[in-house]
Image (spheres, one colour):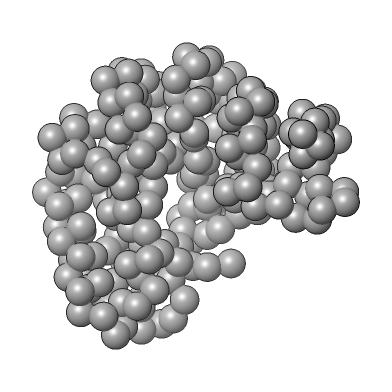
Length: 236
């Protein structure tokens, strides 16, 4: 109850912080984008990861306020980088199932794009497989409306959830993100290499590009390049 109460006041007290994880193009070895990683800097409990406080934010209804704050802050940072002569970089922001289901995400994205004046394709919205399959028909409709606005759409942690390929082909998805659990043992585990190879082949056959998360070593990077992966994100 104490954490829930504190969470309601976290945004107004500037306790929600955003960190940026680079996305690297494997063809050019250049940074082409960032993912916004949110952390709650609690005054007494220290840094709290999203796995701990996002479910509480969904339960208490503060997820929309937190989500809008993160999206706005991330896009404003992209605009600042461009004004300083860097980029342009795409910015990936995670969405929860609650944000997709309450119907307000369309207005929030429009508000962010209008206020920050970044090009819509620079904003990349990430959803998980479980979010997709929670209410697939409604999610497809919302994603299509977001796609019509020009933003990019990504499926996060691909391969760890319960998505149906029959639904996957209907989603207007631009990117599939390979979960770190497959990347971690890529150098030593032939099964992980086979899984990644097949995810990349599947994605490219359906048009989405592929991002491998949690890359830690040069050998992992070279193996992913050989497997025709498009982008990587390194662990912070």
